[in-house]
Length: 280
Image (cartoon, rainbow, N blue to C red; front, side, top):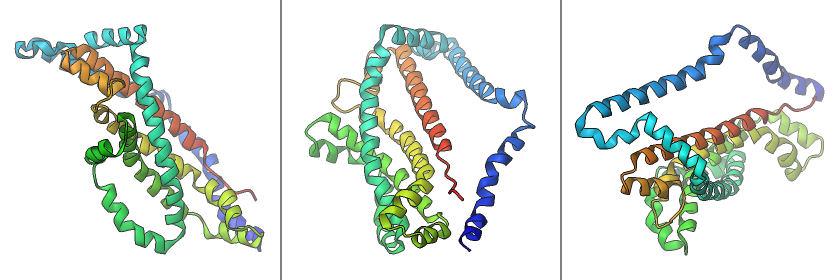
């Protein structure tokens, strides 16, 4: 009876890896080159906007936004090491903010997803807090933390906690009750079931929430670094704006996009590998 119940859960999940390559067989070279085509279109739009700026005397001061000037400035940023010096403090703040968001959001998500009455009680305050812009907490953060870095990390965590929490809770609610029943029948206690069934089953959801949280945190980072810090990507952009170095400003924007894209891609690959199928 137990084996039959387990097998009834597996066919759909187990068949997916075998079906995925079959769906991809009909996709040829054009499918592989589609991302490059999208990037080429983005560059073409950037190049066209640069030409429009160059042809209009009223916007002559903004020609640094054009690809030629910006790419040259980007090369200089990388060659001089300024790119790393600007990115390192920002990456440290992002890492700390995401860590605090994860340590708060993942356990709360497991709790909310497991206990319906807890979800019913916490849903209204959570939704209310979620709809408040993280930057609205800036005055509170400045007053509450002794350092600017602490305030920025708090703002990042306040922005990143919600995707992790809600994604984890949604993953817990999707767990097949048969798995939990089997765990209890095999003598698994609450901690054992959590460790060997619940967490592996929702790991992909947690990582997906973390990926979404990264995107939100990366957006909040730059305006948060407009606070009193003297380092980071946000500070570097503010400094480039104040000195009218638009080529350097655009290079920094490009650097932010490339770093964010790389981090998102890494988390996406990690989430794709975290898919769990229970053993028969």
